[in-house]
Length: 252
Ligand SMILES: NC(=O)c1ccc[n+]([C@@H]2O[C@H](COP(=O)([O-])OP(=O)(O)OC[C@H]3O[C@@H](n4cnc5c(N)ncnc54)[C@H](OP(=O)(O)O)[C@@H]3O)[C@@H](O)[C@H]2O)c1
Image 1 (tube, protein in one colour):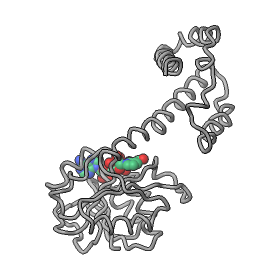
Image 2: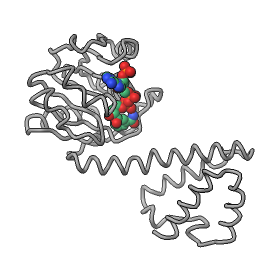
Image 3: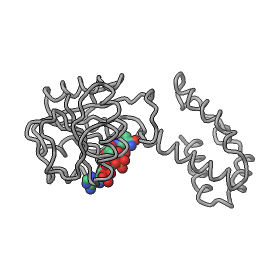
Image 4: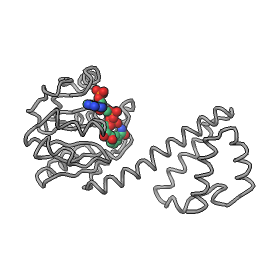
């Protein structure tokens, strides 16, 4: 398909690479800043613009990978008639595109995407939805060409899965970040925790995480919990979080 990419951030870049690899023709990257549009367009071998009036309407699919807030303003910038437009946001309804085209939908990559990571083997499940059967058929064929996992998921289900993604990826990563900072301040080696992190994630392939909880809170080991909390008095924000997580584990 002839594709125009709107946005030039993490999702635009990672999906752009997959779209190109799948043999689609990328015509143009349009973004707010000329600089970021140019960088991505150079990598994908297409034109760049920061002027929405210059949008290449010979495109067949317009992939909008802009920040959630910017999606609300898109209708003031472009209207592509009956050309297919999709956005990539987890928590924004597809109808945000209803004044941009007659045919519209969503193509949500359910993965944590960073443009600095060139790893092409990462599986990116894609959740799709659309306003009509014509659009869903085309989005489905397109999504299958760039991902082995494609699922039809309506707005309300996508929103719920986005919450699941925040809990399992964003929050878990934040805990890794806090643990790293704690280890650095306390002068112990965070890298020694790496096998534990990997084992905890690997278990999810075959077991329910609810059955796999270990640690002092799960064992209701009050003496150890008390030792940890005393050590954490030097880290008050972390101590508050530790108490909340402990309470959540002890009182599910
Ligand atoms: N990253 C992920 O892991 C991930 C996964 C699934 C879905 N998503 C969704 O995908 C969308 C894009 O996310 P992202 O991670 O790619 O974000 P990002 O890296 O921050 O890139 C955002 C893009 O939106 C553009 N933009 C921001 N505000 C704008 C405005 N007011 N007007 C026009 N353009 C504007 C930026 O333009 P400039 O670069 O030109 O400033 C940039 O190209 C979001 O809806 C996000 O929820 C993200």
